[in-house]
Image (cartoon, rainbow, N blue to C red):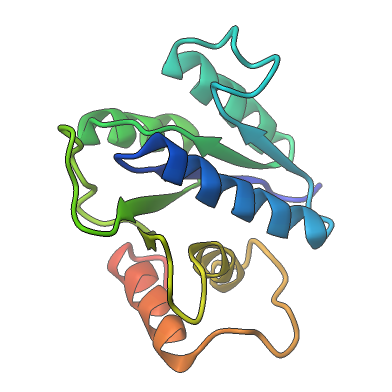
Length: 165
């Protein structure tokens, strides 16, 4: 059975979080990876009004080999740390809106992937998230990867900070 993992996509602006989560979902599906997007606004998921229920569902999917993308603008750093404890294998994708952070959002001390939205760089936040999965051995690399040397260094630096590499 394939190992799954959860990508927690979070940030201060729900619409930006959703856009990045949808892009990651699309790219994983294009590679044929079993993927599920868990978003409180998704039809049929509305019954999960409590983030604990969403995390429970994500943990169950991940245990069954599904790459689960959780799109939640969780404002509290403590709540995101709790999510990390619940989910175990978690890649945090922090979506920071260009121009700063507001609205009482507590940015992560360190996230595996950081995206400044809108992303004007050579590689998108979705590219960086997938590259992190590749470096961790959770996703097969694409031949002739589309990452600049700067992107590659940034992803490796973040993963080393977490002790993954």
